[in-house]
Image (cartoon, rainbow, N blue to C red; front, side, top):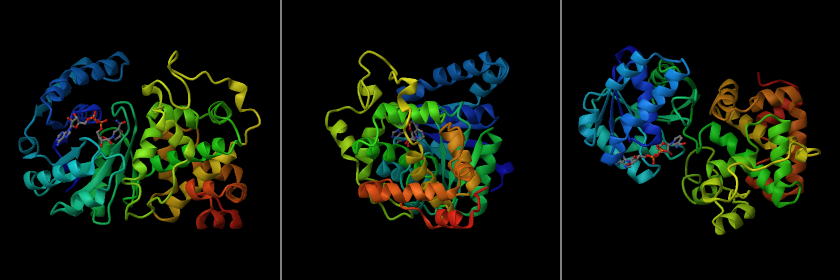
Length: 396
Ligand SMILES: NC(=O)c1ccc[n+]([C@@H]2O[C@H](COP(=O)([O-])OP(=O)(O)OC[C@H]3O[C@@H](n4cnc5c(N)ncnc54)[C@H](O)[C@@H]3O)[C@@H](O)[C@H]2O)c1
């Protein structure tokens, strides 16, 4: 299947992500059939898409006529077979549950044309197992969009060991055709590229606070105001519901038989907050209290004296590990961090800037001081990082 062969697309799941992905596809000129088991969700698609196109018209990004024509290219149905019967590519964006997604993939395999590519927008579930329920595992891949799809520029294209490289290439071309930047995750690893970087960002910070190396506000202020991250690790965890996700996901798909799967423990700090129902901003409290404000009030100078390399080092180590294991290129890792996380600089460019040797020293020093940090935030330097430090080579 080549990019020119793709005309009709389908999206399964009309929630926040599904309708956003449909909106992007229709705007790029593709016909989109969107399917959901919940008619109310389908009923709301037009209104949501109209609203987001309206925002683009207001910003002068598209013309009103384009928006109207794109809306006409979106069809809704509760019948999965009808949605995919003539689709060239299907993007599944239903709820994040492995069993439900496996059922959907079996149905898609039965109803979509043999030529169709089947993609999942899972945030981190096992794509290999989705491929295995079909008779076309070579045509199954991940396309992981960021929220909201209309605004976020990045999409991760994930291969399993079954995926035909040419099919993944077509997937990547399609993402570019839709006006987005694809990065390639060459193995089905838990959390893929960007969220693998986000993990040590939050983990290292949590363990540092747990061991009283620094306060929550100090770490957040230093990373946000000092390093230029959009949010510090604790503010970010509260914003994304990271405490709940981390505690609940740990028992689930992060420990499976995929490469670079995790075998780690959750920081007791997170367990304490979880047990108190302090899941984050939506719950009214997390690391910070939100009963009277939407954003934490973090003084800009609170981070003075905090060594930000304590957080950067495990993040850079994880980035290097992905390159070492051929999960992604150094370019794609850094592009993912910048476009997916809005980070000021990619972790490998950061390593090049400060020198891998300093990063290695910090990893080892932290690991030596606190064994759980070494285990959980995986601060022991990987082979590639050690090699870069020894040879003084850069990643870019
Ligand atoms: N929200 C995000 O920030 C984000 C970002 C990247 C990826 N994702 C992933 O995208 C997927 C969808 O997330 P969301 O935030 O849009 O969720 P959502 O809860 O807003 O929407 C999920 C939709 O799936 C529908 N659904 C459930 N079972 C179905 C089935 N069998 N067939 C068809 N539709 C079904 C539900 O009715 C609902 O409308 C998940 O896998 C999620 O992990 C989410």
